[in-house]
Image (cartoon, rainbow, N blue to C red; front, side):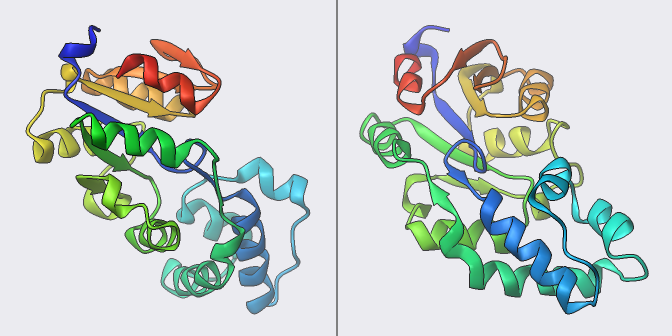
Length: 202
């Protein structure tokens, strides 16, 4: 895609702009402890990291419901938000995008509460024209719903957007929507191994 054809850049949050693994490891174990379950080791937790809450409840919070577990997640995440790490190059890349007048969107399979907690903590909201979370669509990535919703709000065509993600689900969602996909340390239409490399597409 030629640079002049790019109208918008869509970002995944976790794994691209921030790393929340340590935060979620503590949140998860805090929540297990609250309900009287045995804590997980880092290795055990990492194996299922990124799974939806439905999976967590079924596998690890046996006998509990999403309605019971989710408030614990939220309370503990708010308390552990300092453990979320902002990648060093994130602000520089986002700032350049805004200076270049490109439209931007953030897409996340997390809930709006979690996303807002992270964005507010690092003052990132100002860099995005549109934010789409799992609460805003019926189907999460790898379905294309988030991307299509973001494009509609941005008033751009998917083929004129670049999606930057770090998982296979991100890449699949992007292709299903018709975006150009840029994989951050993962295979896409293009691949980058550092955030600053994204600048060559914009």
